[in-house]
Length: 94
Image (tube, rainbow, N blue to C red; front, side, top):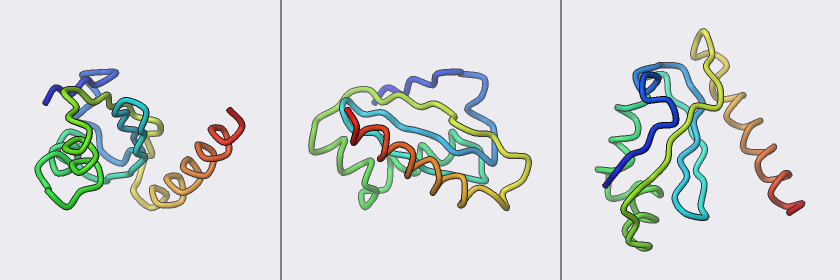
């Protein structure tokens, strides 16, 4: 599995809202831990929605980008929820 980070140096950042793009499917999440660690959890956990999508669609590559970096993890959940809502509204208009 190839992981393509939009900004390779930023994969160690913490307190981020991130987007994983897998073909036509996007996953939005948040983590207070290093992003690289969280992405690996998605890939190695058989119960992860991300892992299941990858296995079902036989994907070789995923793309990861940071949408927001927050100074503390207190606002992560709210920003993740807001970002997902914006994503849904934007994509429903296409």
